[in-house]
Structures are given as C-alpha cells and as structure tokens.
Length: 263
Image 1: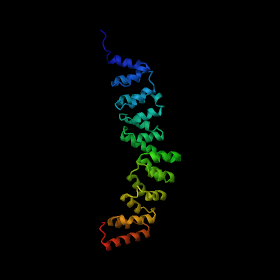
Image 2: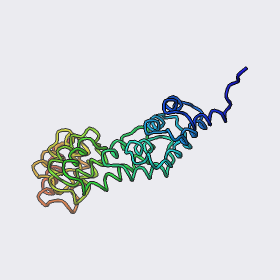
Image 3: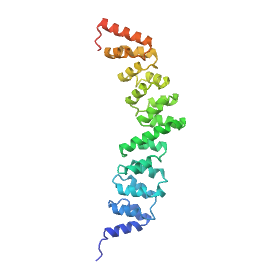
C-alpha cells in the first residue's frame, strides 16, 4: 500500500518541481519546502513575487530570496523584500538603498514595512530631492509622506510649494518646523500665511506672527485672535520688526484697558 511522502521527500520534490508545480508549491506553509523551492532551477520571478506577497513568509525564506542575485535585478523584488514585515533588517536596509524615488514613496507609505525601514526610505528620498527634476518634485509634493513634503516645501520652488500645501499627508508639525527655520524662504512663509487650511490653525498663526518673513498685514490680522499671554511673550522677541513690536504693545494695552477676557 503506497504511503504519503515524508518531509524529506517533500523537500526533494520542491527542488525538482516543474514551473507549473512550483506555482502551487509557493503557497505551502512548510518553511523547508519553501527553502527547497529556492534551490529549484525552474524558479522564476513570478514565484518569488508570490512569496514576497505572502505576509507569513518567514525570515529564513526571505533571507534565501535575498541570496538569489538573478532576481534582485527586479525593482519589484527589491521593493517586496524591503516592504515585507519579516524581512531581516540588513536585507531590508540594503534594498532601500537600491530603490528608485517613487518606489521609496511606496515604501514610506507601506503599512507592511517595518517602521525603521519606512523612516530610512523617507531619509533616502529627502537626500535625493536636491537632484530631482522639477516634474518629479511636483509629483512628490502631491503624493509624498509628510517629512518628504516638508523637505520639498522648504526648498521654496513656487509650483512645488503650492502642491505641497495641498498634500493631505502634510502635517501641522511639518508646517511648524518650516516656520521655525530662519532659512525658510519668504515665498513659503507667505504661502502658508495665505493658505486657508493652515492659516486657520492657532499654532500656525502663532508661528507666523513669530516669523519675521510673514507679511505685516497678515500678522496684524492675526493679533486680535491671540491670547494675552502669547502677545506678551512674542513682544519680547529680539528678532521682531520694530513696527510689529509697537503694534503688539498697542494690542496688549488695548486689551488691558478693555479688560479683554482672552488670557
């Protein structure tokens, strides 16, 4: 009576399976079978990509894929290794350094990727921004993650600034970071000050009043909405325009005389 093949037989079958059989075997749960598949000369990129799409693929199998140099020429394979939650740290980091800019965007936003890998992909993108053509910068400004968009915003290119400020992933924290930098271009400060989404935030208004590049007419429009405490704090800043200091003192005095309840 025939018996079921044992584990060693399964591994041997995986090593010698046809391409058609490999298409089924890549869905096996047995790690040893999957490792055996990686030794099969009939293995092709389609099989590798299935393994990379499986979130349960083990670290050992992923390490084995990373040794298959003929498949690492594929951007999708490199991306799949970097984005996999079980990818060995060194493998993932190596793949990040070999990705093109828009795959770095995908990786930075990939929920499956490890947090450290996502952060590294953002840093890799930010380092490439100065060398990118304006068309790619515009696309990144519209689609990129917050830190990348913030870096593009700080460059101050007119079209990119407009696109960056409408990116739904851009955060208030990045806006405040831009406004705190003394080297942020006037164009960027003015664009933030006039943007309906960002200029409605109290924290952003406060940062704009503190920034010496904010147009005076906009600053004056914000003053009535600031608390007395913030007005007093800002009026002590040495970097403020003398005219603005005068307006601040007048506003403080006006509220004091009127017993304004905003404290």
